[in-house]
Length: 547
Image (tube, rainbow, N blue to C red; front, side, top):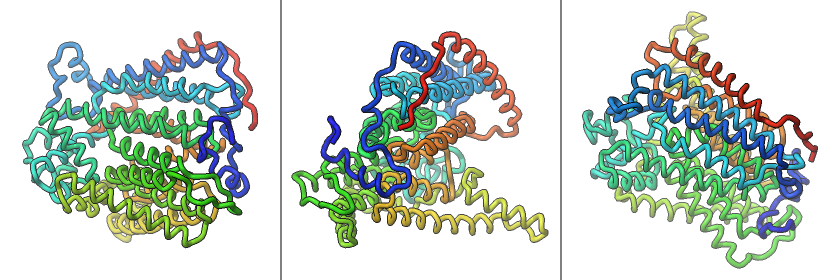
């Protein structure tokens, strides 16, 4: 066992080396890497400052290009209100900040690549995330207006209505201060979020009343708590699965998609994913090291307690957003493998975890003040399917099939084609997840890789896909998939999606011509910034060693 590792840190590594086609190194790659030298520390300093300036620009750009509430308090305010009167300029500033953050993240990736003789340390990378996050804490919400739905749906519950039966317009009224900032398509729809999130939302509304700005600020604080949990869990999980903790933290917590959509966008995925990862890590703390051929030691002291605590925390994540519940399946697989890998062990582990899941979920529902109505969210999980987005592959397939039918003269059957393709996706996604679960149980796949891939399959084949949905898959995979091909693919997808979605969180209503101009202006400014920063970057690079 490597120095500094706990009993569960090396669990399953030997097995993965024997069974997986692309095994991880036998212990954490970072342990054989040294600290950055003076030249590399200077490179790190430039990348940090470049990204921090980008974050500041994004914060200023949000004042005029963000998803502001209908009653925008910035309008008429001296200096800061100027941005609301020139939204195109503000959008160009925001795009400039986005590009700079992405480029700084890519530059940081060179210093966190596994196999280097000298790597950035986990504390150095964590401090970088803090530097980039600090300005983003004060932005107007961007990329989405979901946070206004959070406030309105929580207020519905606070007033004694059932948020799983009625939407903001019916319960609060069309003219309510919280309703008017909710996008029109969501004003009549019930909440798809779990009872724990509704409970926390009620507390936020009790503290802030109808003050939208302070409500948004507290929901962002909730997202930051989730990000803190992600930063805590990722490097620890990475060590357990033989992946570089620095690489996992760079690809996970420092990812622009995390900064843009969890922090700036104030999405509750931050809390749900954070609880899921923390729960998985806690559950593994008492797990001894085993291989497919044994030996399988008897129960260790405190082992069952760690499993119960971990499963309870994962269930709390599911009580925010339901995808987190899938982690319990792969945790059950790991427990069954530790006991001997027989079907009876799998069913036994599933039964134990099911008890924890039900108890915690019932407690969350009852504590929400809704009583047994707190389980009504199960019937509203498909609320988002009202959106027909091109980003969802199955919806795009339906559009394509319907359009092809029109070309053939068969009539307009786009709606029917979308329905059929979504039904197919609703079957294929869970089937892939089940196959990954089975492969993990048979020691063919690391369970955390299986979890990330399964979440990705369920969400990609789902009716709606948003950029922040991909973080459900990306963050577990960042902690368990250490091969170069995955890192390159994940980097390209993250960087591309990070700058593909405009930050204003709404359509341009006939003003799409603005986008090319703002993108062009941002690229020109970024090119000048890169040229300036290049003068301060020490030249020369170190060849990367092959592990």
